[in-house]
Structures are given as C-alpha cells and as structure tokens.
Image 1: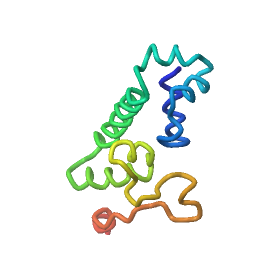
Image 2: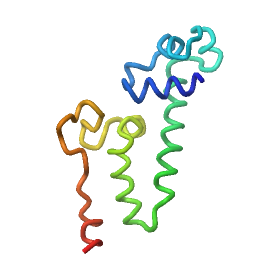
Image 3: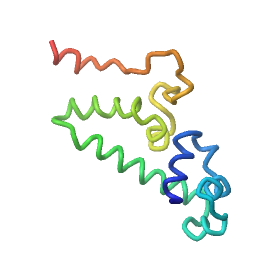
Length: 118
C-alpha cells in the first residue's frame, strides 16, 4: 500500500509532494511504518525511479525497430510526464505535466512516423 501511495503522490504533485509524512498520511499509517520500508526520502525517490524505469522499459519493449523505439521514447514523455521527469530530470518540453499544459496540444510531432504512414 505504501508503494502505491508514494507513486500516487509523485504522479499528482511531483517531487515536492513526496515526503515521509505525506506518504504515511496517504497510506493511513505512521511515519515509523514508512521508515521501516524506506530509510529516508531519497530511498522513496529511488523506489519511484525503479518503478518509473519499469514502466519505461515496458513501453519501449513493444517497439518494432529502432525508429519506433525513438518514437516511443518521445511518446513516453507525453503519456507518463512525471515518470519522464523522474528519469530525466524534467519533461521533454519542460511543461508536460497534467495541469501545466492546460489548453495546449500536448502531442509531440513525430516526423518519422508521419513520413512512414504516407
């Protein structure tokens, strides 16, 4: 349950939202319980990076070839902006997060894919 809650906090609020106390409150448990799983906040973020990398790897594993892998990499930013931020430090366009791109087209133009479909 704690893993689910710290992932949910990350997805909704980013790095600032992931705290030991925040995870404990979201999981309806105590901070000592969270500390029994994670030594500190950095350990929480490391666990989140592992989870994000698993999602990223699963997304890329469906690639048919190298160009498709490149396209999928770019698509990952728009479909998993918080995971992309966790793995790369920030989103591809700097504002891929839900909420920060309200009213904007969040798709990324993929010239290779567009050319292949013609």
